[in-house]
Image 1 (tube, rainbow, N blue to C red):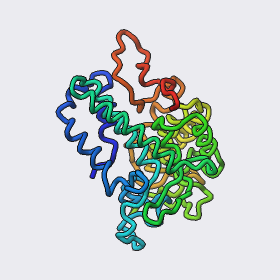
Image 2: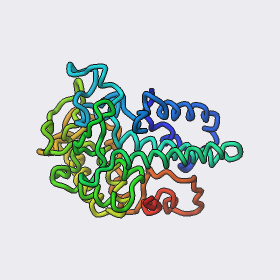
Image 3: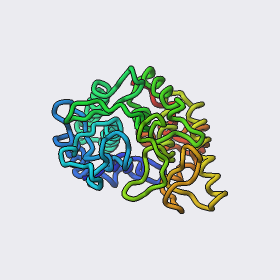
Length: 324
């Protein structure tokens, strides 16, 4: 399998200055095959249309609280738990994957235009399914769903921000999600918690084996996506507040240990696991400046060809997205 991030990553790279979307045309069959994998059972639940993770670990939030047992690495695992976690993150990622596939096809033109329209329709269908099946007005965010037991998973985690980042919500939903993220159980002194402090499994344990800890610590990648999503819907003040706290935690770590770490305690600010970690921590370098300038480096839009200007292409500005 492959996580549904490849096509959007390819588009962002090819649409950037110096990139060339045409170089990816020969990979069109592979892109179609990847999306087909996620659009059929067992990745597509026939009863709900939700796409599902194989397990919590596959989502990237190793031991997150959206499932009772993270993966086969744990004694609590049974094969019956596989392919039952329907959550907003996989839906948001696939909405972006189909959007990126449409952008490629539209750029290539000609015979690709029919497929481009199909990808646009698929993204719209995924968005409708996300809201119909997972939106909970009473909670103020999308919940998760166990497709086997047919039970709600109401745990509050950073995942509630992913539909914002995907540009997949309307204005009232965005306001509700922003309020949920700003709650004291989610917003800490060092940024957003990966899981609510009110969750019974909440923990800031310094662990990496068998799982990195996604049950409380602040992760810069999750915070950055949440910030860009909030800014997309006009919640820039909250985005800047979260970003300021998260970036300050990384700056303090550099002063203290001369290195970054994988995650940070949302109780003490202490660095947790993987000393010398870089990867998504490097998002901190331009997070505040991008938010202040209204730039979203993850925005998916038609390739722009700015000439003789130092301003970011309009396609990368946060204010170009209009709620559906």
